[in-house]
Amino acid sequence: MGDLLRYRTDEAHEEPAVTLDGFLGQSNATAVRIEAGEDARALLPHLDRLALVEVSFPKFRDGRGYSTGRILREAGYTGELRAQGDVLVDQIPLMRRCGFDSFAPEAPVDEAVLAASLARYEYHYQAAADAAMPVWKHRHG
Image (cartoon, rainbow, N blue to C red):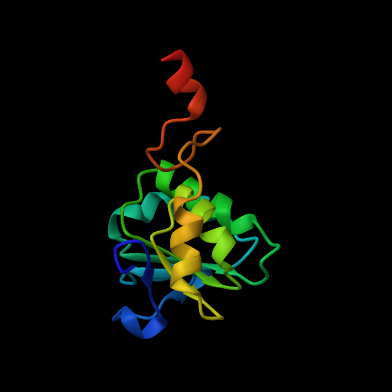
């Protein structure tokens, strides 16, 4: 399961993530935390020095973090992108498609349920930040 999903906590990264305002106000931080509603585009000039971007999911029904992940990955961010907070097992496949590669959920995730969730769909209908080819390209490509 470790190759399917990396679970992380703040202690797993040597440097604690600073707030977006704190990050923009200093020059030496390599880890930043983005809260729901903050604009990830403020980080675009600094992607080359970031090792970790932690994105807050305060409630499972708040989807703004998905956009944050996709914005950063499509802009070329290659570091660790962590979803933290109210992360549910059925959200993880889409979070991965949006570029998240590590997770710090508030509640434990059953690994068997996660494996089944990740394997459920062979094809996707839309393009995302991952390399999966949309099903229509398979038909017309």
